Image 1 (tube, rainbow, N blue to C red):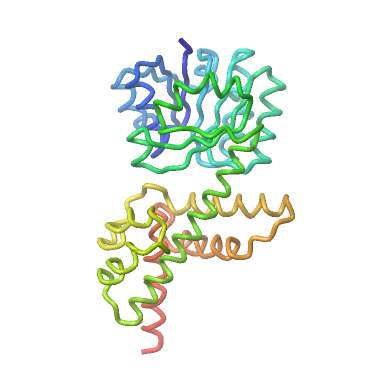
Image 2 (image 1 turned 90 degrees about the vertical axis):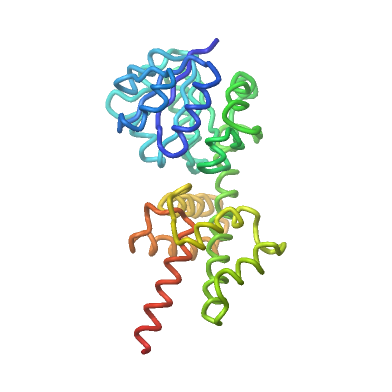
Length: 297
């Protein structure tokens, strides 16, 4: 049985690690804020004091971090974990990163004799908790096969999409759709309220129609109650749309709608919505409309 490590125990990583631990796999964990690791440690995982120390003790290392800059810091910074992973071990990065960055990490890992796989996930807080994530995987077929038991514990399945960077690339496509769809729905809801329809009437009318993505239905309670406790924080949606924009630039592909969307999310982020669920983009638009109405009055 492989010895597993997990670095990054935020909203997603903590739940993914807990599923591994509950399945009985030997698990070592690290997180910069130690108290975030407490539930999985209480369930039986071993907390290790540094990424470097953890790396020296495992065969397969999973990382679930906030952004490429943080991944690079942990992997290649002072006493980075790539310097301590055993030769032939496997690093599985589940962070949402742009594909060129994942390819860069694959090259860096190879230079240390470490295998690499990019395996970001489709899904947020509740699917992570319930082991219903979909892993989007780029890497060697044998490495994917070795990780299949762990993907099955943490998710409902996996798609092996090609070589290094392929999983990251598909995640760009998925989150481009996710962010744009949430923003467009928020605009429609906002216009509907400006026309005098109640929010409940709008939701009752719009959500069952085929023009609204299924995930938006899961946001109904947030929109109704104006309680945007994060399942997927808005700041990370903005980051993902920015990474999609970078990827499009690298491939000479225009993304006019997405580039506009990422700037709207950036404005929301700068106006206090960064830590709230990304569905709070509706609240940002709604407050902007109310402020404008006040100016006209």
